[in-house]
Image 1 (spheres, rainbow, N blue to C red):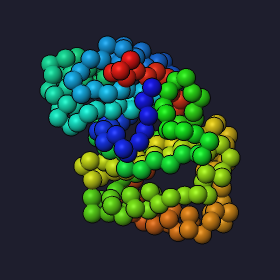
Image 2: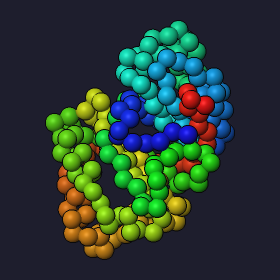
Image 3: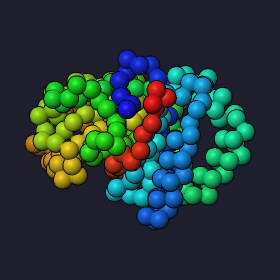
Image 4: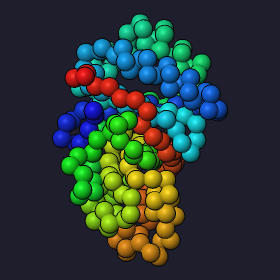
Length: 225
């Protein structure tokens, strides 16, 4: 199953699709499972499909060997004339985000950051908009080692991805459950360490937009499978 680490150097494409209903979400999941199960593209490494929890939608975490391999896939007739029209029909909103993993931190009890339907991760994906000239400052803030969060009940991991066009940063986090994540998310600022409060305050000044949803992993396949 796929792993998240900056050491791989993969191009990561995060496809976020929105829909209005549970039925619409299931139609998206069915279509994506079929595409993943038949994926056989040069440079394709893995695809991990997520089902929306707080809001209806899907997230597909796709690893590619390089941007050139991805562009070859986008240029193909099947993608242009079959895949794109299909998802334009099924989804009410589509984001195709090209990025790279720049940082990953995990609970000491974990050997690696793995994403798999065989696990029970409660996954949080947050996309932060940023001006290109501020992206590195935001990355510096978000990738500062955070020993405190390792002690928070339910924390498993978080990984930071840099948008290759300079306009966004992604936080991909794994928790034990919704209840434990919500407790962490809703914790009063006064109960967080000072350095954490300062980092959060700086990030808020740099961020121009915030889009978040929670997910469970639904399906995954890698080229080596």
